[in-house]
Image (cartoon, rainbow, N blue to C red; front, side):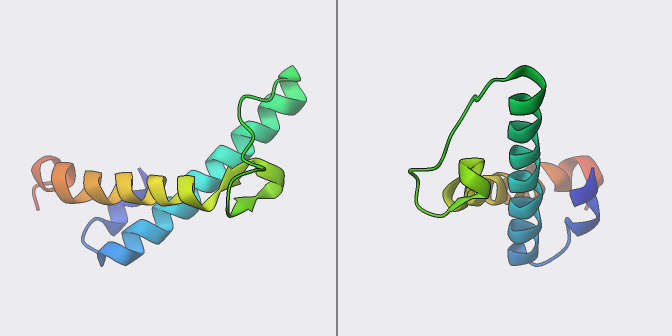
Length: 82
């Protein structure tokens, strides 16, 4: 929803915004799961670019950015009419 306003932006803007949103959501979800349920579903501590104590990492943030860019350049023109 939030990325809709960026669908006509430069690909780098879409990539960075989606990477930050995806990484932040992943970190918050991990934190919630740990404190609410005592479960640790993933731990990226051993990955390069690990952030927030292993709750997310730069390679997976890049995956969020790539998927959003692909979605906005392939899907959005057909569904948004642009």
